[in-house]
Image (cartoon, rainbow, N blue to C red):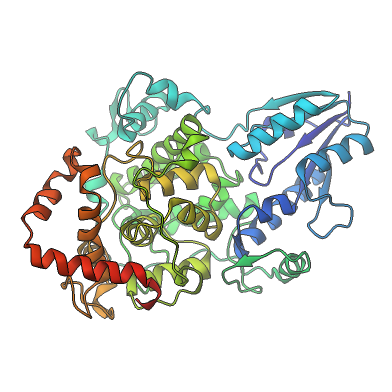
Length: 510
């Protein structure tokens, strides 16, 4: 039986059972297509990274003896649509059975189900063999429970997969070292430069332009730093263990204007494209920790493991539990538009200037920049979550909808009404000042709430609480701040609200 097997751009898993033995009757297909480049406007580095990784994967499986066809974005015979590409291959290669790995985006899952229902040949879906969990494992775990607490899920994952465990007890007799992961970075420890592959990607950039794909953001065509093969991804993992792990946890939540990456691994693209599996990443990091326990503390490692075994698997489970209605949720009824500076980086707010420009320059920002600077600002200015979703999905190299949407619409924008977060992640400028050096050289004064030089985050924060107080009045975690709001001098609150509304009406002036 002649089979056609589809490999999507985020299914570059060489360890998958499909590739463990050769079959002359099996043909693999990988395709660059306008369907995927155009459904949202992407950062140029994101498109380049996926195209190069797919091309490298195609070359590798061919070298391993597998039959594989590839459609480049500029190929004249590329139909640019998934259904048409499958149909073309079925006819050309006289295919008798179509197979695919379960996609991680609801959109593609529905499309492939529809495609298969219209085929006149047999079809079958397989697991991607990447995650620790199945799609619906989280739903089963929380069945009958009102609160979907990540910590409970994380502890269960640690026990089930025996990660950092001594029998039924966590290593170090503590499940979570989050309290140790909040140091402000003051330059006391040198930060190694990121792992950079210095690749020349001018050819693929040229093809993207030839195909008239609309992108945004910046790229150095002669110095592309992201991994685009399994071998390079393993090198990034090794570099993280050797150079960054020993300080990762300490400065996990820190920001610094001179350090774009601090001690973060930059493994998210390699993992989300499936060039690396979460299991091998965690096992490699833990093995390195055990071999170097005199230099690396448990809090550095647990903080990293929590991000992958806990948060990453949790977010995926939420996505499949709540889709498709999750994509329309907007419980706070926010409806403002993103300001232009999200595309230009031109703003006088130092924290936003650095976070936005870094995103445009690197297609990357770490989780605190995404959550407590950019996401904080968009929630305080009451931007429509659709606008925020589209920007985050497009700008970040690691953004695929299953991981981007719950993090953005849920965790960052509270548009899901508390499915993920028990309270909105909003703050005044004081949090940003606590965790970074942004405020020291800012145009605005972090200590002022109103007035020409007042930090915009301050007035926006109190205005947000006042605007949404009816919604949050029953939320115990918001009680203290709402009590402070209620005790605020009415004249002061009036001035704050006037300032906040001036900012919201003309965000690009700030």
